[in-house]
Amino acid sequence: MNFISFSPELSNGGKMAYLINDECIACDACRPECPNDAIAEGDPLYTINPDLCTECVGFHDEPQCVEVCPTDACVLDPNHEETKEQLMEKKKKIHGE
Ligand code: SF4
Image (cartoon, rainbow, N blue to C red; front, top):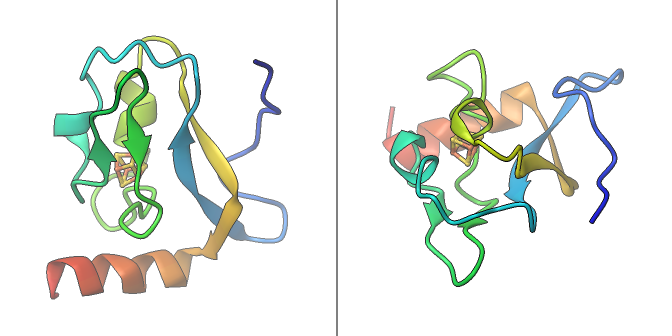
């Protein structure tokens, strides 16, 4: 499957949650790295809960699932565009801080 490659920071300043595409080999590299427990095991593909994904805002400069994925299966989800401020608010709600 072909996916358009998006820049993590869009020209309009918007950002997005990530999703896992069918390049996933279910290696489990990403799941323990997610600071929000947003990644779930799946059969055959792992999934990212967009309600929990903050692009790692507030924790890391780069999305950790993208950093560790050996097949580049973690890509931006165009159906969940959010601003950095919204992502930070989500992070605060998840972690109560
Ligand atoms: Fe988790 Fe960060 Fe990947 Fe979102 S971008 S699923 S918060 S590791």
